[in-house]
Length: 492
Image (cartoon, rainbow, N blue to C red):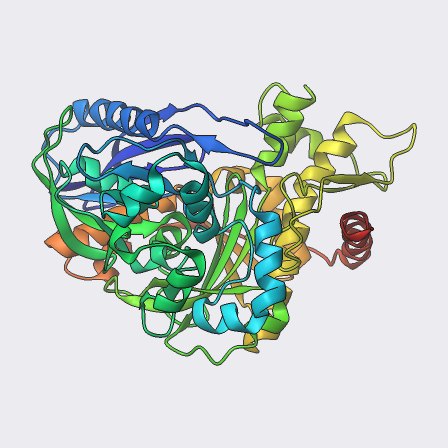
């Protein structure tokens, strides 16, 4: 049976699937890895552990596959940066994760010096520590000897896709794709290449950055131990763009939201960039068309979504498992006036306030565990509505339907509430792990597993949630809670 090996390297673990040409998951394996929090606001990963865990998950998935896959597709947590020695392939310190806020003050300084328009027009992004450039800059300034290695061309800086491809191909391929490059603050979204002026501003030698390739293209052959696969690596995309591709959102105006650790809403806008992005708080990024080539998309990144439920479970002990949330939400008529703004690592789109922190308002003696859990779920839906509104203002395109995926999309109560809040149909595919499916599709197209994108998507099935009534009053109160959070962050 013809199949593709899909590596979905996420923020908390690596999932590897073998996916058949009919879209069925033939095998699946998942391995978690360690999260490091050396200081408040700092988040780090061990690149060597990510490599080891990914290999273990791939080995387990391959054990249950009947035939050798035709290609490997990789999708990854974006913005997270790894530094390694190009000669030995060994990491030069821990990876700095996308959630990390250590360069907040540096970004504010750049914003004051250069202004919002300067960075938005070049990159489609904003001055924020979420993106990769100031992470690389911090490494160069604080890791002993790294600047010298970089100037000599021996250091490599890359997002997780680059790291995995480098190791899979025994160091022969040092590449990234347009979707990942567009998240670094170093990629010019107009010329679609590394921007020399930005490299100079951040003090990053271009020789240390990977070559930019298409998302659907053979970029090397995986033959590294312990896998020794001898399979072409043919698909690469950041996790949210891979999910957009996996949801078949290849045309302008199509949108999806992935509810994972954070929530990420993307809307394909084709090849036109005449957008009011700087005024709306959403970003312009690069996604994939039906052939895996680069197109533009609007994106809103909500930093905390499923992680809020994880915090209620692990931090407060209010849950034993995330699956309890659906039952608890249904057990109460509303939140009892409780609103939870889960700005645990700052606020992303459309507010972009790095100093914001989690806020719970409306507590009374009658507030219960169920009220707080429901407020956490509602926060995902309300945050999504905030981003949709910003996208509609930026593009003058009204959302007609939202396709959803990610772990929290399995919560039926949340998906119905999301439909009510947005006032549009919410469509959930039979396979919610569309990031892996998108990576498989990009790789499979490059080697002929599927002749075209239509053949890749033809087996998809959806469950649809239709609006059952407006939630305007609750959304108004949510906006008031967000204003409280912003006031706290900006008070001096």
